[in-house]
Image (cartoon, rainbow, N blue to C red; front, top):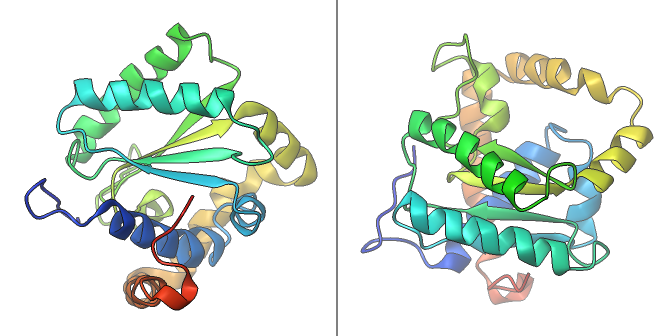
Length: 207
């Protein structure tokens, strides 16, 4: 797991760069989410790094992110990644927090409007061992709350008639890749993050 503290943390741009590299190689590269490539290519993903060091501050940032997504044009910002490197580094605490996050979403009247997906360096599905390769489908460089528009999800699933099979396909992909292949992928992610830091490719990210 990638640890971070306020005193030694990467700048927000570095956190975003590593997340973008993961998105490019793992999520899009392995086709773990068939819907991700389109919004990535169109630059419709907003990346926001929370400086929260406790769950109360993170909830405030989540509330603000939901309100901002509500007020934004879907053609400009379709989805938002709220990355929080300094809090909920323990996966089980993170998992418990999701119930509170969804309660906040519902209390704002956003049930059926937005959905929260979750990613974590130590993500673990129920009834799996920590080292089960299938967990890697939801493993990201940092704890991350992914805010999605339900309307966009509906359109995406209509365009992919086999959307219900995505989970099983992802597990099969990871099992084929194996632990060694996953580790090699992490090295490619780090290499791409290094490339993204250069001014020639637009560092720092602007979205």
